[in-house]
Image (tube, helix red, strand yellow):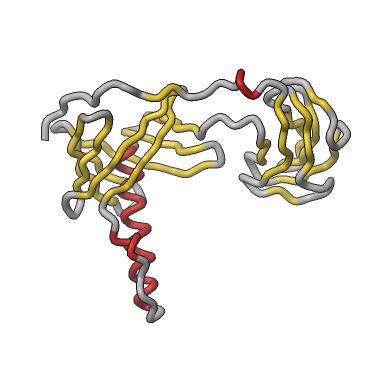
Length: 207
């Protein structure tokens, strides 16, 4: 996952570099960086990598004073061929509202974003039909605060943690994935579940 994300960053930087030259502009110096910090959360464990590009298609992944060498090549269908530890994998990585979805040889893995109950965002496109509580009201965990319409179906949105809610969208507003609908001033922010930082070493996979 970290190697594929680094490959995506490299390709995005390359495209931006070429686009800047085509416009007659001087490309930003950051576009030729060869070290990419990558952070992924999987099953409530946070992995922090420094990924260094050490060849056209190869990367060194460093984590907790250990490292792994990985080769990544783009495929014509948008996927990636990843070679690691003497094995190869077909990988497809897709950004979603909640994080990253990765499919490796047909098996799906989901990397989530840091849990932040202070912000309630739209997970899919739709319409904000009505609010079910007053702006500024105190709400309880898992209680419905508004109703949205998605593909002609009406469904409630729930508050993840107790607190006071503030609306950021008006009733009738059109929603896109990632749009901020409301914020919550939490009653007990210290009790919010946070991802545990991975503190072990990477496996010895060889070159």
